[in-house]
Length: 483
Image 1 (cartoon, one colour):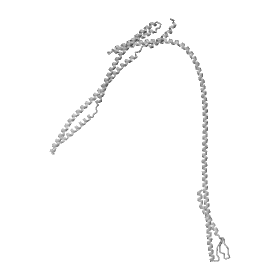
Image 2 (tube, one colour):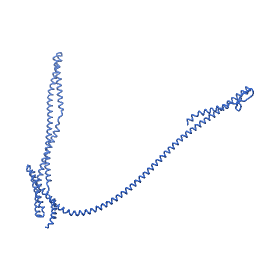
Image 3 (cartoon, rainbow, N blue to C red):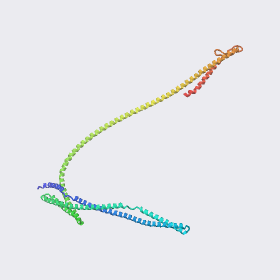
C-alpha cells in the first residue's frame, strides 16, 4: 500500500471509529444505580418514619400515663377528703345532739351553774366542729374543680399514633419487598448486559483480526469492550451480594471496590481513546487549516472589498442623510421663525388693540366724567339762575305789591285826606288839603295864600323801596343755598 494514502485512510478510519464508538458506547450503570438507590432510599425513609412513629407513640404513651396518673391522684385525694368529711359530719351530728341535751338540762335546771357551763361548752364545740366541716367542704370543692388533663383526647391521639406506627411498619415491609424485587431484577438485567458485552467483545475481536495491522485503533476498542465486561461482572457480583437476605458488609465493600477499580480502568481506556482521537483530529485539523487559510485570505480580500464598498455606500448614505437632516432642520427653523414672527405680530396687534380699547375706554370715561361735571355745573347754574329768577320775581312781585299797596294806601290816604279836607271845608273856609294832582295844600299864611309842596307820594315811594330791599335781602340766603 502506498504510504501517502495511509494518513488519509487512518484519518477516515478515526472518524468512522469515533462515530461507531459513540453509537456503541457502553451504557453506564447510573440509571441502574439510581433505581437501586431509589429502592434503598425508600426503605431508609420507611425506617425513618417507623422510628419517628415509635418516638411519637412513646411520647404519647408517656403523656397519657402522666395524665392518667394525675387523674388517679386527684381521685385518691378526693376520696380521702370525702372520707374525712363523712367523719366530720358524724362529729357535727354528735355535737348538735350534745348541744340539744345540754339545752334541755339547762332549761330543766335554769339556776344551776354546771348545766349552764355544760351548755356553753357544747355550743362552743358545735362552732368549732362546724368551722372544721366548712373548711373540709371548701377543700373538697376546690379539689373537685382542680384542673387536670382530659385523658379522652390524649387516648385518641395515642391510638392515632399507634395506627400511624402500624402503617409505617407496613410501609417498611412493602419497601423491603420492593427493594428485594428491584435488586433481583437488577441482577437479571446485569446478567443480560454481561452476556451482551461478551458478545460485543467476540464481534470486536473478529473485526480486529480483519483490520489488523492497518488500523491499530480497533485494538483499543477491543480493550474497552473487554473492560466493560469486567465492569459488568463486578456490578453483577455486587448486586448479588446486596440482594442476599443476610448481607455480608465486608463482601459488599470488596465488591464495590472492585466495581470502582474496573470502572476506573474502563475510564482510563476511554480517555486513551479520546486522546488518540484528539491527536487524529488535530492532524486532520492542521491539514484543513492550510486550505482554510487560503480560503480565509480570499474571503478576507473579498470581505475587505465588500467592506470598503459598504463603507463608501454608508458614507454616501450618511452624507445624504446629513444633508436631508440639515435641510429638514433649516426648514424647521424657518417655519419656527415664521411662526414666532406671526405670533409676535399677532401679539403686537392684540396689544395695540388692547391699548386702543383701553384708551377709548379711558376717553369715554373722561368724556362721561366731563359730561357729568358739565351737567352738574349746568344744573347748578340752572338752579342758581332759577333761584335768582325766583328771587327777582319775588322781589318784583314784592315791589309790585308794595307799589300797589303804597298806591292803595296813598289813594286811601288821599281819599281820606280829601274827605277830611272836604269836611274841613265844610267846617272852615280856610283849610289845607290835597289837590287833585296829589299835592298837599297847606293853609294860607296870614299875609297871603301860598301853596306848599306835597310830600305824600314821595313818602310812599320810599316806603315801597324799603319793602323791596327787605324782600331782596330775605331772598339772598336761598340763592346762596342753591349755589
